[in-house]
Image (cartoon, rainbow, N blue to C red; front, side):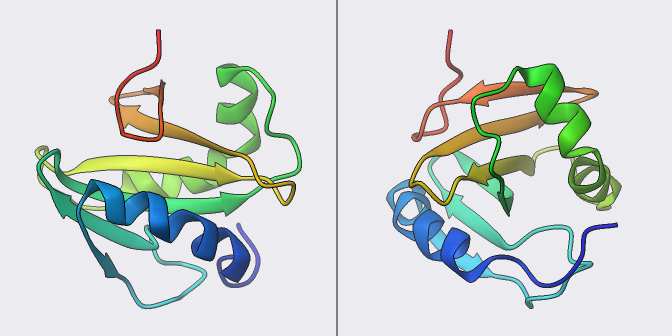
Length: 117
């Protein structure tokens, strides 16, 4: 299980990017909350969990392994299928990566929520 509250610096880095995508509504800051905030905008409703990591430049498979507890928490939320779930990884060196949970897999996104590829 993930220890402690979400990283304040990670949330501060994520906020301006989230605001570009729509209105941001924060959840209660709790180590067991399935998300940190929700974005309501033209792309729909998105629940986002932001995590701090030191290993940002890894494969999708490595992300799935390293973040398995966070992904399980996001998947466990009882949400309607129209609400998207995203994991945003923040590195203390200033970089971020974005992922959308699709059924049992991850899709990497750009900062605007569009799939990369």
